[in-house]
Length: 398
Image 1: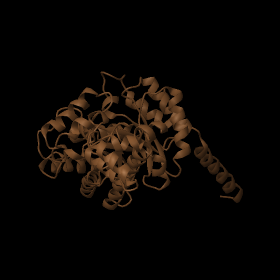
Image 2 (image 1 turned 60 degrees about the horizontal axis):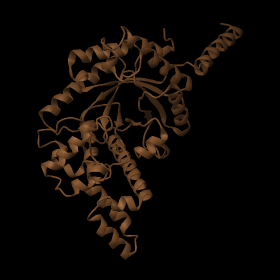
Image 3 (image 1 turned 135 degrees about the horizontal axis):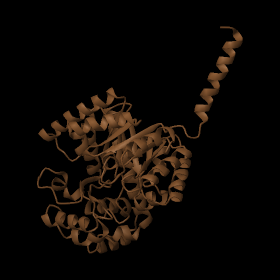
Image 4 (image 1 turned 60 degrees about the vertical axis):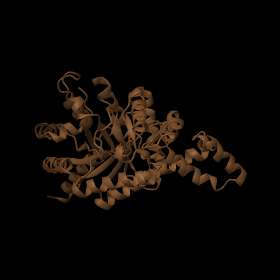
């Protein structure tokens, strides 16, 4: 080949490369599906899932894996199913991440019968809403009425909370969750881990006796003796006394403990599996994340606690969705920015529109909630998963 032809060929190749790099509709780096436990545990459904994901251009599967199981026969069977799933996924070129709850330990519903469940063993670690603080302060945490009141409260407000949560404000609870996570990752070769519920369910949590006592210890030592005695006397009647007297310190305290939980979980994950990818789901609205849920994810990315931030999937208006992505992209820094798409709650056309918007803005990953709902023929049109996969990969939403 002559020098001129080589130069011409090089120019053509360079043009193709630049076109690919600069194309506004280039595919997102990660294209993921959240997967419920019942699907990946069933061998036939798992095989179909892996085949579907590979055929439609997905790169990542996030498996719902509970941390509430103590070591035993059930966890051994679960681990065997996970090993088989991961091996099959690897053959098809798919990454597999564990999708775990960072604080929610029990979904809404009946309390577990087993005395080995964490809420039975450590009821004092369960987060308490402000509304129940005074009532529960009069009860021993191991009194059945204590958990009963919390469970009823959660069931009656299923649109606000979705179960019972262990408190990130209590170091022993955070360490328990980290131990369970480390044990899981030591046993199962996940490529990554994603934390959900890394938050307080609302700004009205955690008024549990242990959490408030820890806050009192932090602020009381700085108070004049008389003021401290006055607050202590009031708090014997109303456990909300210290949080109400020092609202800014209370917010900082809770926020710092949620950050400490993320740091602890991330460190344990990387200790168990060096190089593992760590992501966390956060409220898409930055004000809601910080104010309502105490998620200071700007700090998390600044100090390198996580590799990726994933905006939780929602049904906000299209303009809000776009603004959340733009705002998050200015904060994410060196962390990857992923966004969830609530395909289970959006119309097919709205789902595809969200994908177009996210790809135009330039997110690093798009995760679809969830495989099971997308393939449900009673809720979605035929071929919906294939349409989503095509939109994620090429931008063609036909």
